[in-house]
View 1 (cartoon, rainbow over the protein chains, first blue to last red):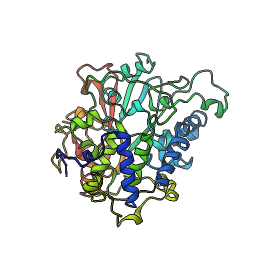
View 2 (cartoon, rainbow over the protein chains, first blue to last red; view 1 turned 180 degrees about the vertical axis):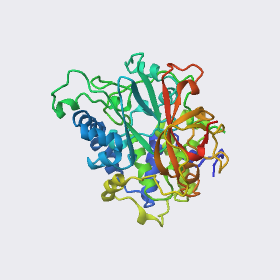
View 3 (cartoon, rainbow over the protein chains, first blue to last red; view 1 turned 90 degrees about the horizontal axis):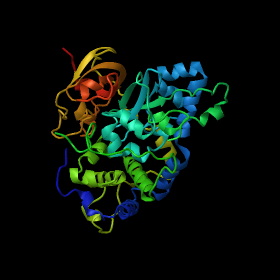
View 4 (cartoon, one colour; view 1 turned 45 degrees about the horizontal axis):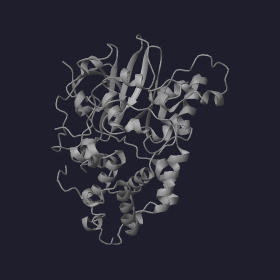
Amino acid sequence: MPHDHSDHPHSLLPSDPALRVRTLETILTRKGLVDPKALDEIIDTYAHRIGPRNGARVVVRAWTDPAFRKALMDDATPVVAEMGYYGRQGEHMVAVENTDEVHNMVVCTLCSCYPWPLLGIPPGWYKSDAYRARAVREPRKVLGEFGVTLPAGTAVRVWDSTAEVRYLVIPQRPDGTDGMSEEELMAFVTRDSMIGTGLAGRAA
Amino acid sequence: MSRPHDMGGRFGDGAVIPEPETPVFHIDWHPRALALTLACGALGKWNIDVSRHARESLSPTDYARFSYYEKWMAGLADLLAETGLVSREELSGQAPVQSGTSDRMLTADRVAGVLATGGPADRPSDIAQQFAPGDAVITRRKNGNRLVDGGHTRLPAYAAGARGRILRFHGTHILPDSSAHHLGDAAEPLYAVAFPASELWTHPEHPGDEVVLDLWQSYLEVAP
């Protein structure tokens, strides 16, 4: 039922966005459909408990444990679930590995699909029109805006998340990190390196 | 046949502006909008495809002028009205009437469990897998929903009619073209399909680059 009427119900709400959200919450709370304490709990989860450090832990283990890396590349979902990273927007995980030959990068041109249990809520730019429109057509120009230049011999593979499968990029381990502990290596794994708009070891 | 959300490959959007990892939320009502959307989703009146379609069905004017979470709020308000959970009068400011479905309300103690359970999209299907990795395929040249005129689909316009190759098989998944319209799961084989950049764009940046999309079997045909 495509509902293409000119008088969408949303236009009945106040035009100021902050007021619009508050009005909707008030209506839903008074109707007994929403519990404000549940909203606080959801917000606390994504503001403080679930974020890119989860994904970084997966990357570091892939760098340091060949058996883990193989299992992750074969079927990531049960492997990351066992580490406690499963749930909404992470039900079907695939890990893709950067090499000298291929650099992977993730986008959702249709909305903003993103692996929440591993990376948290996506950054503003991931949800922006500019990134959604351009990442598939000119990924190298977009990478340039993140300060990343790839060698001519490296192909770019852009993953457009058009289904419920979510992708985690395993960046290349930086040179000079041999012998470092897992905790030390964690510092090299940036959020952007796991989306593919950055490289490990370089802050966005 | 296109809707304003289908913007892959579009020209004219300007630079991408990187941002640090924290803070996660920049404006105080953003996390509230996110949480309201998740809490209402838990009421069970719609699925993720229905909610995506609600946002996509905003007028192109609203889609362009609304910020990200404003789109979410508009889609949510429209769904609440459409499913009868909230009346137009209540949205207009009339005193809200206590709902009869309050037993489904997401309570704080259930949040962790609901988020951790998620909503897997894989389902059994009677439709046999037609393609294997390495097979050449062509996407449907028109990318519209074949069940509902103007309906939801997950084949972006930029990849319609393009020739690619099957990269991997994901198993059988809910078909969003059906589930977005409450027409059932209609699960079918889902594949990652790789397209050379030169197949998609007039001026590809590099001859070796590719774009990979996850596409349902009914979006694909055997390449001649």
